Image 1 (cartoon, rainbow, N blue to C red):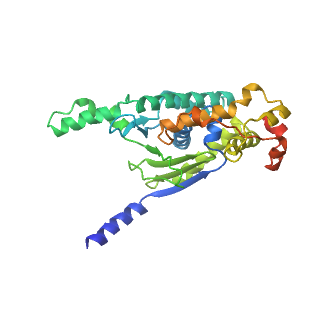
Image 2: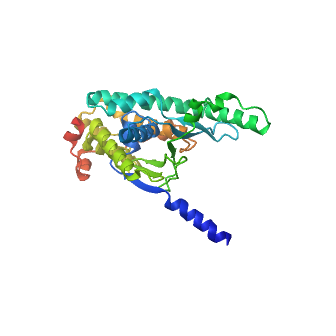
Image 3: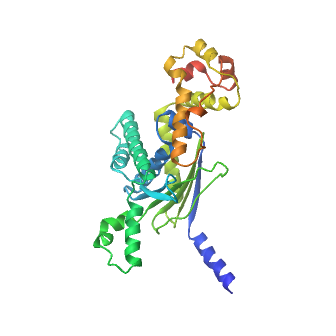
Length: 315
């Protein structure tokens, strides 16, 4: 009957796709914003780099960006395969550039991506506009311009890397299937101290793709700083929720923390809130309203959580 046939077809689709999960717990949004990069843009570069490293090709990547600032606004298409992203992939996969050069190319690519995301959120994208013109022409029996049959436009809409960022903290994983037979569907969740990727494909090397992603993230962690530095930053931020005490005078005075570093926690939190607001994950309160208290942490407390202060401050 119809139900049986529908179940059979659904089963075929499920078995036709490979799904592999990467739950990366070494760092997350806190580490990324601490290094002055947009978390979403950072993840987008990781996806593009993994494909480039695995296949040696720089391909079309798609990411939806919310246009919630407009009445009935939904999404605009962000194309992550930018010129600086290509330079970043070529640099990172080469054995000649230094670590500093690789990190600089990464930051340049992340900055360009973040800037384009803001433009898309502000209604300055082109994909939805062009698609609307094509749809209106077809619906009203108007000849579709040759532009839409151009090889370049077709390549733009053959999305090898279809990606989406889910900001719902109640979910552990989030994913979907590829939109083209030779592509990947990649859903990801960015947490304070972890990154979750769900990668699917139609019998491509999905597991190897996930392993390549993990290898890249480990490299970034190694290039940007040691575990002790990450532990200090994570502990100082998360402790704000547990300790209702203002100021870090005790820790700062004992460890000669400079005035510039005294405000680092607040700066990192502000950067995180700015990211949340763009991607529709945050609340209505202003950024400054959320940066009211800083945790009180002294040398004894750091020792209790296994952090060597001298080593951390020098990292």
